[in-house]
Image 1 (tube, rainbow, N blue to C red):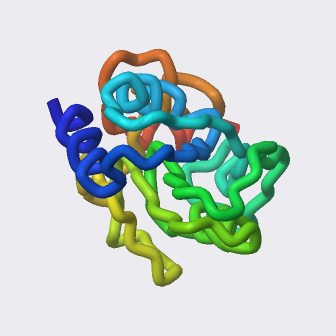
Image 2 (image 1 turned 180 degrees about the vertical axis):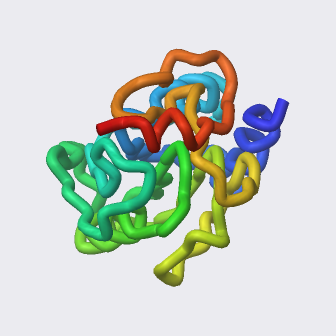
Length: 165
């Protein structure tokens, strides 16, 4: 239900204007799939791969963008979609790159927001759920590329990620 509400909110914001959606892989795939077919406006879709976690449970502080979108974003309404916003480093870096292309507008949409972890000045425009500072997996979110396929979001027990070499 929450994703349907997000789609309605996004629809109210953009009306009938075409929306260019850039989604951050791999984590946002499940969320985007649910969101995309509920959006009322025409859309164009592309992806970006940006990481700051690797196989850890905390951000490394360094963002690596290994694949950038191919769509032209100049003069377009852009919605950047991600699974989770915590430190904000990855999303801010991607937003900065998008702004270099001079879009008509740029907004962000995240399934989960962890505001207590934020290290940069970035507030998402559309938020599914605000969550506490716990490491979560499932519904596309992973730990070391595992647990993405869980059909729900769960808190990963610390003994699982602390036991990892």
